[in-house]
Image (cartoon, rainbow, N blue to C red; front, side, top):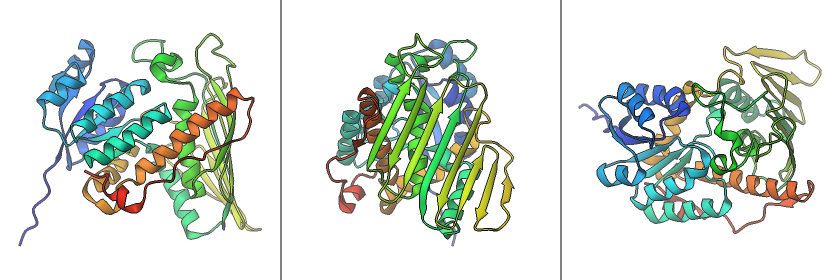
Length: 359
């Protein structure tokens, strides 16, 4: 008796810029459980690129046209951040699942609206937390799960860049425009750092303090540097982010009762007690490139699992909600001179209501 392979999920890419072309499209092409049938972008130039890259996919200038004319299982939202919430809500109104670039939304009120819409539509909402799928982070997480360094007490993460990424073929970047980006480096690299800190500490945050500044891009309407301290019930995370550095690197440490892990861009160093450190090298440093199609491809297995399996639905949305709350409170803290701000909010959904939020 043969087992019939499930039909591929029908999806559309919304926003055909750099991250879609360089990061998402290579992953969609290699995954047999998904089929990109349409592309949506207001730019005629980018739609022409889509015609070359995906000649069989239909093309639309607006999200309304797309949702009116296509029968979709999901949309892949790859537009700049300020538009994410509106696109997600439009898709959910049609009971279409959402896979969104980070951040899922730049305002907490929008995140709550998305959560409510996802429950009503019984549709999955999944944010591209692709850094969790980097080989060095996956190896670090396996080490932590084994208990090699004991209970985690401290996490430090640093992202150093000399500038934000520029738009394709130009020296401009929408990331310095608050109307398009919805914020500065906290919205961009900060969201990555927030879910990584939660992932490595294996706990939900309870408070944050943050200071933001403009060290290099002083005429921009957003911050280019941020320093945050996140409190967890039994641990603390320190985060430093800048677009004003003189180099490009990512680094971090995770400290436990029995030892520590050091993430040195392309190396993971494990130090346990008095033993000599053990270094594991990786082919791709964390700071290499901006789009990481291999990480995105690995992440798609979890997206498909959430769509297919009610038992795991909502895990990623809860993670995104934690990031959204941290983002909002970080800006509040910075406006108050770095004061500690608690993350209290309405109780999280119960297990039963989470299961109802799947598609």
